[in-house]
Image (cartoon, rainbow over all chains, first blue to last red; front, side, top):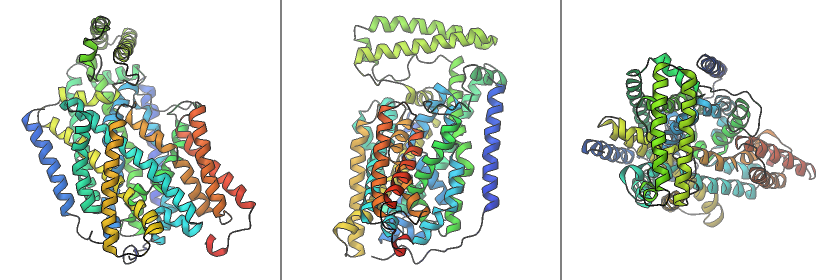
Length: 41
Length: 553
């Protein structure tokens, strides 16, 4: 039995900007949900 | 179901199985069978990750939750984007570089074989059980719609799924998942269009939202810090974060998905796809349930959506009481509709309360007449809408989507169960040196065996409340503890094998005690399990000499 694959491509670049955008999107969705809930309750 | 609907279902299922097998090139070795030779693009892995979670339970159970309680269930996913970022920074590069088949292989390198085997065993037990529940959801739907018995329905779903998963391995699973995602999203959008068409015939969009809001169904975020409440901002953000970290970081069914990616970057991107899309997608599905509720304000709904016991109730001594309730229900529905059209909020809210009370009373009568104390109709709401309100052809598409969702999600889990069985137990403990062909054959047998076991579990787990909650509750019994042992392994150098082993057992024991003796909601069990494992594990570790540098590396 061999090891998995012939060796993975270890391309490993920083994605800090992507992480920040992901978290900003989540915060925006939560804010929209709160406003939406208050608007239509 | 009319002939065209049947045709859509049959064509779709044949195509799924055929295409799954056609794409399974390179699965003549264990590497290809379990890891697709690490060759899949990030978008396929990302869709596969999401499809493995978006099972038929999501379509049936989440819409049912949207109908009965509204959007509050979305809080369950609040921890997910944060978990994806943390995992992208930590375990994704870690597991990829470690070149493992299973996440648990690493635990032996870091601790010892006992810790690896215990963690893998926990995964196998928990996942085999939840796989049965995953299969039960569409079985419940289809048995109701088609009038089949549950065992026949379970087999109708399981046999094709076991067939292509056994023969095609992870590649068949991944490419089937990709197609499933498009069909499910397309089907849900079609359902939303039909719902909006039906609603906007009666009231304006803004009025529809106010009606849903008046019953609390648009109240999505609850900031109360009450551990007894299942879905709050805090339970989702903290308990949900730990659940998602455990699920995506320690559960082989997810880890194996991103181990098939071409590189660390592509594995990260595949996980981040969930971070971007999961909450909006779940919102769409929950909103569909809310729209079904608004739709039925203007189109007469059945008193109960689950008709499994109609004949039994009609023949029981409670038949008269049930008929009286039906008359009361019809009157209450008329009052509610009238108030909804006029926009009389006070009368509408009162009438809706009356409708809910009658439904609860009717469910009580069914329970009394049949002796089925677990009777409920949450998971029957959306299937009833599909089969009675959607146009011919689209009914077939939605049923095919439910079938395909069940098979795709289960296929991924089945493949992961086989991987852990063969790699962590068979090859590690029983047959250590054998040919690749031998391990491949055993892998296929393991896939088939787990598939058959899941069928049996499915037949016994069909009527256990809202199905999506059932799956998540079972997962929470062990997910937090698994996360705790990986925290010990990856984030500390001082933890010893003995500490990790007993810490893991202690975490499980405490979660079981908490689950059965306190009202603490299940999402918090993940946090409790992880904390207990780390605290107990470190305490025991400090009573021992430090591990050797090699073991701690």
